Amino acid sequence: MIEQIAAAAILLTTPILMAAMGGLVNRQGGIVNIALEAKMLIGAYVAVVVSSASGSWMLAVLAAALVGTVIGWLFSLTITRLGANMIIAGLGLNVLAAGALGFVMTILYGSSGTLRLPDTVLLPRLLPEGVSQIPLIGRMLAGLDPLTVLAWVSVAALPFLLGSTRIGLWIRATGNAAQVVRSVGLRPALVQDVSTAFAGFFSGLAGAHLALYSIGIFNEGLTAGRGFIALAAFYFGRNRPWPTAAACLLFGILDAAQIRMQTVGLPPRLMGALPYLMVLAILVLTQMRSLRRAK
Image (cartoon, rainbow, N blue to C red):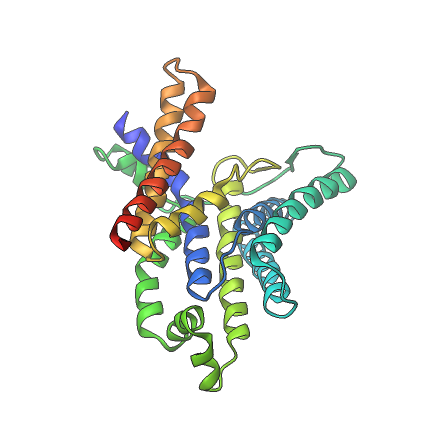
């Protein structure tokens, strides 16, 4: 049972972790990206369509990432160039994406809610099936895919990229003191655009993982609020990659555990809400702790 929960937890953590890493960089640049959910959803749709049309999971993943990047850039322009409120713009994009995708599926495929296309290629597993025989970690290793590995590599790389590189310094400086960035001849708006495009890139990958890891279909409710969980995760982690990853993993473990508990006869709706309730409770406790420290 522990092996099954661990393997499922890693799988369920990956899309949240990828979106959270993108949102974390965006937040460091001074933009709170409420629209992670929309870009995940669009990425999932594009991944399924391209995978079916091309027969290549790699092209599908790249297409999802590219579309997420473009949408992220356009979303940023509404904030940095047109002066839109980032919260309102983000919520608007979430609503627009859900409605537009439903319309497109109806017009192009005559499908309502769920899109299943032929010859959809799923993400490959990196290790041979035989590793599943290894005690405790075998099932988890057997389920590893390229995007899961990329997600955890990004967690390891981001502290260096944000803390020890020039672009990382520009992003952090823009989020904390845009006037300083402007004084040295840089354009804070452009830096924010780049960080938002980065968030779109990772959100598109997150959507591709949701769609292509095991099911190969697109559903309007596929993301199920994971973009908002990613948002909560980097707030919980105080914009630091490793604590943010820990928060994502906690949600993945809770989500995997509730799926397992449903199989033993516990109420499905109650168990399904458990991970979200636990994340909410942790955020409340974290905020209370911060307020105590501020006094």
